[in-house]
Each structure stands twice: as C-alpha cells, then as structure tokens.
Image: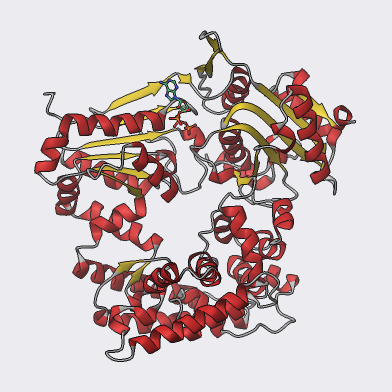
Length: 621
Ligand SMILES: Nc1ncnc2c1ncn2[C@@H]1O[C@H](COP(=O)(O)OP(=O)(O)OP(=O)(O)O)[C@@H](O)[C@H]1O
C-alpha cells in the first residue's frame, strides 16, 4: 500500500483507554498531514458523535477547525441527502405507501377484542397518510426536523437515517459523492451506531478503497442501546487497533471493571490512573471502590445521605457529604419526586411502552419535544424579556413564520399575535400553574407557535378520553398491547401539569446531581455513586436484581438465551460497566434490595468487589 493510500480501521478498546483522546489526535493529524490538499479540494474530515453535546466538545478540542465537521449521525446524513430533493420526494412517497400497507395489514388482522379507540385512531392515521400522499407533490422542499410531518416537508430522525442508508446501499454515485466531500470519516461510540449505518459506510469504503478512510472507535462492552451495532468487525485490508491500558480509573475501580467484564468478553485492562505527587513523582492511584446493600424501603433518601456521610468520614473528603458527587440513576422515581415531576415520570416511564420509556431518559420521546424545544425555552425567554432569543425560537419553530406562510402584508400583526401567544404560554407553564400538558399543546397548536408532530395532533384531536377508559383489565386483554399502553400513557401524560416540566428539564439537562446511567457515556467524574434499584426504575431493559443474581431468569429469558439473544443480565452488566468506569477517584455502588441478606450473599459470590469493601446497613449505624 502506498503512503498515499488510505486504510480504514477499527479501534476497539475498553473504558478510559483513550479512544476519544485518540480520535481527537487522529483528527488533528489528518489536518496536519492533508490540510492544504483538503483545502484546495474543498473537502472536509467528518467526525460522527453520539450526541450534540459530544459534538460540541470534540469540535472545541480540535480548535473549532472549519475543515473538521463534527456532528451527530442524523445531521451528517441529512447534510448528504438534502441536495437530492427529487429523490427524497420519491422516497417519502414510497415510505407513506409502506406505512399505509402496514396499517392495512393491521386493520385486516384485527382480533375480536380490539378497542374502538384503536380502530378510530387507525382510521385517522390512514386518512392522514392518504392526505399526505396526495399533497406530497406540493411540498416545496424537504427539511429535517423532530418527528416526521410529510405534508409540511419535515423528515424526522428515523426517516433521515432510513432514507440516507437506503441511498448508501443502493446508489454508487451517492457513495462517491460522500467520499469526495469527506475523504475521512471517523465514528465515535461505534458500538451504539445502528447496524444499517455501519454497513452503509462500509459500502463507501469498499467502493472507494484506498481513496477513503473510515475509522470506527468503540467498545462493545459499552453498548447501551438495543439498536447499536455492538462490535464493528474490521473488513479485509483494514487495520485493527487495540489499547491495553485504562488511564482514567484508579486501581481499585479498575479491578471492579475487569471483574465485571470477566463475565462478558473477558478483556482485562492494565495500568490505571497515575498521579504526580507534590514531589514530582509519578505513582499509581488506588482510589476507593465500595458497595452497599441496603433495604428497598421508604428510607432510600436518608440512607443515601448516610452512605455519603460515611464515605466522607472514611475518605476524609467532605465533598462526599455535600460536594460534587455524581449520582447515577436509571430514570429514577426518587429524582422525579425530589424534582417535582413524579406524574410525568409515572405517565412516561412506569406505564409506558418501551419506545417512550427510552425516549423519556434522554428527552427525545415525541410527546416531550414540543415542551423541550419550545414551551420551556420560549417561556423562559418571555419571562426574562429576552426578545431576541424568543424571536429565534419563533423563527425556527412557528409555522406562521415559515416562508411559504408569511403574509405579504401584516407581518407585524403576525408577530404581535405570536408575542401574545408566547406570553399566554409562559403563564400556562409557570411554576404553580394548574394548566395541563394538553392545554399547553392545544394552545401551541391553535396559536401556531409550534408545528406539532402528527402523533400529538392525533391524540389531541381524539379529545379528552372518557374516565372509565384505561382500565387495566381492558388494557391487558387488548390484542395490541403496545398500542394500548401508548394510549394510556399519552392519556396520563396529557393530564399532567405542564409545570412539572421544569423539574424534568433540570433532571435531563444534568443541572441536578443526578444523571441517567444511559446518558453518561464518554464522561468522567471524580466521585461516582451508582444507584442500583429496580423497584424505582421499572425499566424493562435492565434489571439489577437479575444481574446480581437475586432474581431468577424468567422462562422468556431462557428462551432468548437459547436462541442466541440476550437478557436483562447482559444489558445490565454493560450499563453497570459504563457507570463504574466513569470514576476517576471514588466509586460507591448502592444496591437497594428487597431481601438484603440474600442480596448480600449473591453479591459476595459474584466477587466484583473485595469482600471487605461490601457493606450493609450495619456499617451505617
Ligand atoms: N495516552 C494517555 N496518557 C495519559 N492519559 C490519557 C491518555 N489517553 C487518554 N488519557 C486520559 O484518560 C482518560 C480517558 O480517556 P478517553 O476519555 O479518551 O477514553 P475513552 O476510551 O474514550 O473512554 P470511554 O470509552 O470510557 O468513554 C481521560 O482523562 C484522558 O485525558
């Protein structure tokens, strides 16, 4: 291979091994080596990250270099697809046909016990899709937004990926264009990139061998999302890069990490964090790693405070008592109650189908978006008199200010209407207001503040559900369980007070000391407290009781294992690995168990923590 030839690669390495650090170095090295030639060809280097926040951080780390394009996979794909408006139109039409076909199939297969509400909703959806199909030719141009709305020309997250990966799979020219614009594409957190994106990008590498460099950086043990590709295999001629060391975790935490991993792929990391003493000597840093098994009762808050005080005393570190400790929870009832969004939590987590629960963890679920994107920031801007910020939001989201809807005359009148609507919105949203989420959504719909997702509209159109509906027996008997779950979840959601969103926002934006266990990929903190508590999370994907061996596998779990699938045990192990490996100094795990005695025995048998570092309530007295 000549030095000019570009070789694709996969970097697979454990937590804290410096993958992100290497990615940043790789980006800088490409610019150093190829900067002028990229510049003269107007080419850029692409770096794909998992979240917008990660994208901003990485771009800052490479000095905000304009030759480096850092973005999420969705924005990257949309940038590539956007110029092909005619092809997008055809794709959207075929996608609507596909959805109509699915609905048709569903309707013709109705069982005898399908609820009338389900039937009505399906009919409304059919009518909506048919209308979209008729109007698709009138759409001037397609954009990428939150939640698809085809008649308005909006493609949602899911559609953007589907459309782009289809183009990548089926169109050699599209692949060439990608490589011409971006001869280097690096993907961070590749274990959680979807399989179709990985294979689409691999097709580009196969077609443009030697002229295109594709690099995946990931750790299969840190896959959190069900849709993630996991281990990305190197293709023939690719390089595989491994890294043995963990630079982040103190040795006590590294031992726990290696023990957790020994039941998965068995990868063992070496070294651990090294610090420089005041005398200038480099020494290995031991840190602390402890586990508490405490009763799952109504004293959880008090017990966590006691654990923190105990660690503060033992470590002679007051920060453990009231300083910056990162509390990692799977969306947690305790956090919801403390921050005042208990009803939202119950609606969107306890009783909701899987897709909504997942989207509640990172605020991407479709019912939440009108609040996260518009109602909260616009209320804030209005109350604080930040006219400019309010205007930016209105320009971005209000259909009344979309170019095609702008009245020739009377723009000032439209603006005045929107300003009044924003003030009314702020009143509805203010802490202490009794207004429901339904009232806020209807206000946004009626005043044109925000283009609501058709799914939201469909529920608003259905009106307030009769109070006898949502009865659990009825739901359980329903033929289509997820659909029934969604309906009862959204009914409960629409009845919540909209002001609960302020506490929820604080939670998801990590302004509170709590973070979701799923949301801390790539991050690191000095002091980490992981709360393992099934009773308060009721998340179907994870079960600490099963992982720690306190609860037996179900028949269904065994069937999954026999069929080569995985259970909550494997998923929880990976989540637990990600959480524990965030610690740079001290790690404390608190496991709330129904039967503390049995849990203690099971945990000790797992050998994850040294036996003298496992405690129960007796230590706190
Ligand atoms: N070669 C190195 N020498 C010393 N420290 C390093 C080195 N590479 C990375 N680090 C430090 O180790 C820590 C972990 O690095 P980084 O976040 O890049 O790892 P990662 O593999 O992406 O981690 P994870 O997969 O757990 O998110 C950081 O604090 C980083 O500054």
